[in-house]
View (cartoon, rainbow, N blue to C red):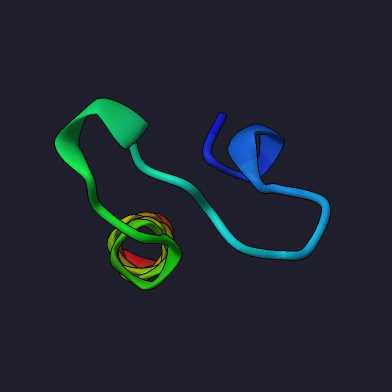
Length: 42
């Protein structure tokens, strides 16, 4: 589900209503993917 939300330029975009920028959305998404990777490794 997270990968499906990735933008064409490779970034992730958070809700523009909160005025967050692409680095914030990308960081949050990468943290979520890392958590999933760690959970699957257990």
